[in-house]
Length: 516
Image 1 (cartoon, helix red, strand yellow):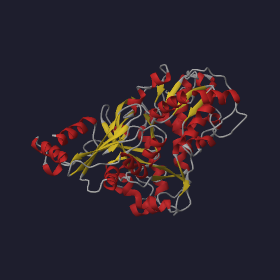
Image 2 (cartoon, rainbow, N blue to C red):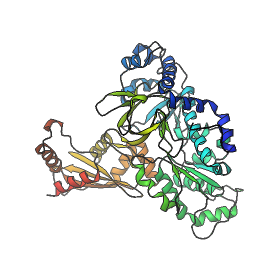
Image 3 (cartoon, helix red, strand yellow):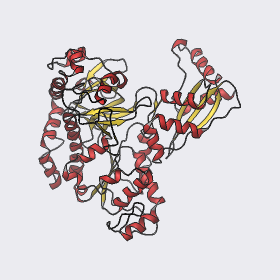
Image 4 (tube, rainbow, N blue to C red):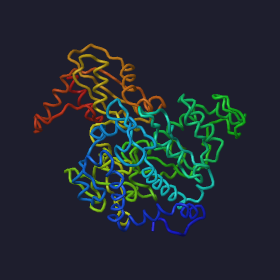
């Protein structure tokens, strides 16, 4: 068993308090078909009477085959007609259950994605989160004795057209944690709602420095690197506030005190860091030991998104598919669809999910790799986003966004290409294809327009996790030469697309072609 009855005191207590997710998870390791069948029955039953369910002809009694036959795989854009009706406040659009709120993240265009939260969906996500915490305590009793620092965003930022609260999933999860987890948080939730970015970051550090932080959780490791830089930058000011029991930037007084040395030094006995480790995050994970001053065990936070929790890190191995949560499907490179018990180790798949919130056969856009199995449940790692997208720290800049911004800042632009310049603070490298040499483009204007176009990019720029872009002009003939070379190498001319989102090697190739 992954979660045995025996163990240290805090682990046994939490296991007893959260027995249902444990039992469901353990069953999924032995009988994935049975576990996923239960999820299908629950989801189909809640969707059948909705607008979406009636249009699809659902009865609520679909088996695995009938579910696929009734519902095609859809992207967010293809589900937008129904999601817009949810946003407008119309009831029972995607599910018969009431929608409590919407969680928001960046979309593929300037309009943010908003996905619904229902009680059953929230319970599924909470069950996965409880398993993650349980695994941490099972492996290290010392984590129970100190504080757990998390970096989250506000659970509420606005209301939809129909009056539904809209906010971040990290903030929502923070507020809905059980009391025995929430009491260990060193930072009051109100601090995460401070609007000024640097004041918020400073306040988070000020509160955290007064506590005995044992674990630090931030989905993206670049966030942890940012806070280590801020710690060094603001050390003297933080020391004064800790000595005086104040938070000068907000005027708060009477806060816990702590004496720190005059030179920046690591302030906590940190026992665990929790963050993404796969895909682009690996670049930043490698930098954590130097930033933290020593090797700290790092555990994945799992395969998660605003749409749900899909694989849970229950030990130091790769996350295990959360088959007692949502209904998961895996589409291989040939477009063949597989259930969790049909996948193969070493293969990559596009993840398709059906959730209790009414997202049915939803193309998440994530490519995952099966690295092995826990029992019969696959272990998964995130590989990359499907399609054309740049994302070093979760900014998720798409081809459509780059092209829209290029058109606005450079009238007459014929092509655009971009890559990531990898560094501790990454940035975009952008070239705009024009017909004549000698023109100029304002990188600041490009940056400002992209920030308006993409809320995630704007957030990373605002918080200092992403640098300003490098933007230059390049003769448009470079793209023509690039395509000609591909055709000469045997690629079908009609299928050769202009390179827009590229890696650094292809970016440099394009620049060389333009400078010939």
